[in-house]
Amino acid sequence: MYLEKVFLKGFRNYKEAEASFLKGVNIIYGENAQGKTNLLEAIYILTNGYSYRFCNNNQLINNSMTSFYLKGIFYRLDQEKVEMEVSSSRNDVKILKVNGKRVREMENFLGNINTILYSPDDLKIVQEGPVERRRYINIEISKMRPKYYFYLSNYNKILKQRNYLLKRMKNDFKGSDLIEILDYQLAEFGINIIKERKNFIEKLSRISKDMHHFITGGREVLDIKYKCDLPEPNKEEYIKILSKRRNLDIERGMTSVGPHRDEIIFLINGMDSRFYGSQGQKKTVVITLKLSQMQLFKEETSGYPILLLDDIFSELDEKRRNYILENLCESQVIITDTEPIKVSVKGYDNVRYIKIVDGTIY
Image (tube, rainbow, N blue to C red; front, side, top):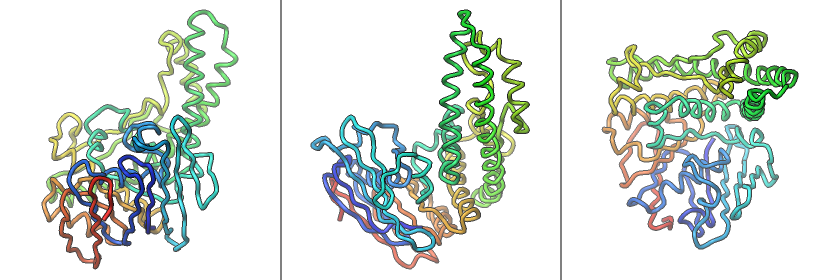
């Protein structure tokens, strides 16, 4: 799949602009704070429905305007044309459209066109707490399995209800019948989440191990481990554990077991990279993850998603830069950099250079 053209109006520092892309490598370049990452963000929003930069809709709108509008013309693996649109006015909800029709459920928007993003903030996946790692796998699994987003959103809704009930029960509120119903529903969605996560991590770990070994010249072995309260996903066992911990949960006013407490651990040569990995090792782990996801998408769908790379090459030598591109020569790659970097890799005959100056695309 690939992006042919994107239109922006009232988005970030763009008043109105459009850009065209090649199927192969596209280099978006310009000085800092000109709008390179904003353009990449627009593409991400068009394929995922939300920004990866932790902001609300109002922050996406140009300061001089009252709304933003994005449109992307994409092609799927079967060469079917797909038009994706995202828009919003100030203090209003986003409107998502696929081929001109409004989509109200996120699981129906996800998966139409897939992108894999690398941004400098992705180092949080490795070096910060488990919330970042759960967020990472939630986002990536939802792209491959839109049904997962349905499981996750319902699980979170029931978890919130259960936690509210637990706090009331601590003050002698009689809610034992209701909490049993919530336990059943929580287990129903929670088990599906755990199964999807285990499947995703097992496949990603297999691909990552070989890729990381090659990238590091055989010096490092990467293992990805999934830690879960339920080693073997079983709804009856899940309900039993929730029941067993109920008094503890009432005392704490929160649910102490479930996928909202899972952890993913990245081991380099058997050591937890969060505590023992250098900054360079952590970045290499993240790059390995992104490349491995591309390969996993290829295995699952027979084609690559679009790869978005935000300022990835600034700290990589030419050998590692070319290694990344050579392993993705069938995919569309969109890269941001401060310079029009030279790319000469087998499989990419043409490169498009897109210059950005103060929200204007050249």
